[in-house]
Image (tube, rainbow, N blue to C red):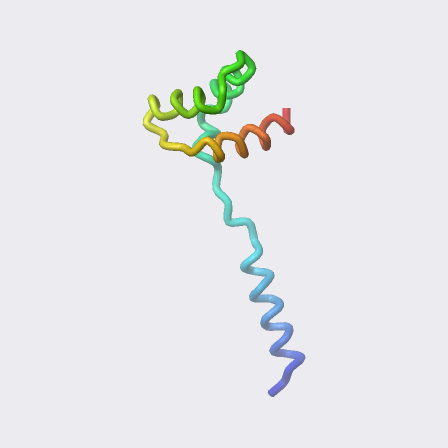
Amino acid sequence: MDFKAEAERLKAKAQARKKSRYSTSKLDRWKPELLALRAEGVTLEGLQIFLSEKRIPCEISTISRWLKKNLEVE
């Protein structure tokens, strides 16, 4: 068995797995509304209620992570 060739093959396969597989967030569609509501002092629970009224089920932790990511960009 050629271990060097096998190692290269495995490295290439591992690299292919690391490629970004992330799609856009379901919250991105509501970015202006969510950021404006948050700026007005709406809590995470309030944002969750807003999204559920739009028929977008979402956990508070998801909203928190999304806000953290999107507020850093601003």
